[in-house]
Length: 166
Image 1 (cartoon, rainbow, N blue to C red):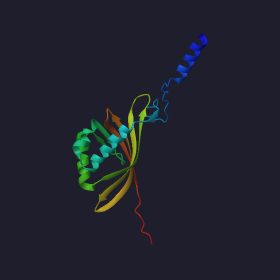
Image 2: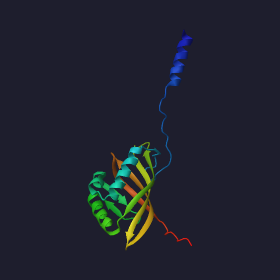
Image 3: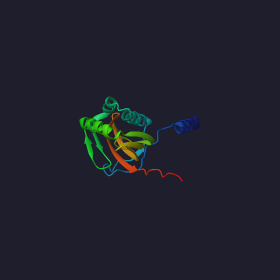
């Protein structure tokens, strides 16, 4: 009987699917003790909605999707702090360069130790400058807090104009 009990206990114990501890990888100098794992596609969906609102010039949705403390660092090092400043800068930019974004990849990720939520996403951005269309690849690394965009960093790479074939 004792052997049967041990056998049942061993089978039951082995069959349990205890969740594996998430170890994570990578680093950020601002949070040196935090490791990162793949995050939820809910964040991807939220980012897509945020970018779509920009393309549609839907300022109400943009502002509703960000925290009051939104902080943005542009590719030239310029900074935007707070919703009011963000709204003002966006309205100016929409009017002067008519930016459009087409997302071509995204990866949500999360901090294991601090439960931070982030997404890094690539976009093809098209601007109209002095009547000429200019294209750049734009990578954005964005942090979400309570489902809202809290801060992001923008990195751009100019895309050369296509050379006409002969």
